[in-house]
Image (cartoon, rainbow, N blue to C red; front, side, top):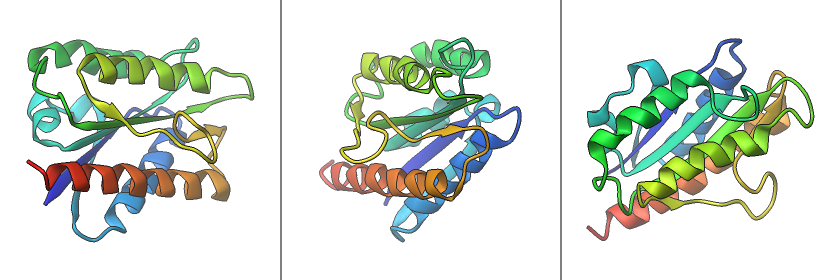
Length: 161
């Protein structure tokens, strides 16, 4: 069974709500193991064990929050061990133009450097789900859809091991 890790940092609760919606989307597939963890509790072993890794962060100065960057920096311990795993990202911000896309791209850069396969989105927010302020119903729906997309790809790739 494929395993998808959703790791997030949330100060206000907005990114947490998004993470829960992403997890619901993955879980809706039925035969994928979903693990939802705060980024501060995510270990290197968690990264190694997952077939898919989705990371969520609020936007801090147009990039990922420090707490997420700490995990990215620690992930050097598993450099070369995440190749071929599926990656994705999502973000929340306080305003339109608040840096959601640049935050997602800062996370995706780290995942790509690890050799991961990034799931893009054709319809919607192309780099991954975003929310301006508290996620509304539309943002939560997009998060769930993104979770399903990443979960399906992780499941397909895990079955070819």
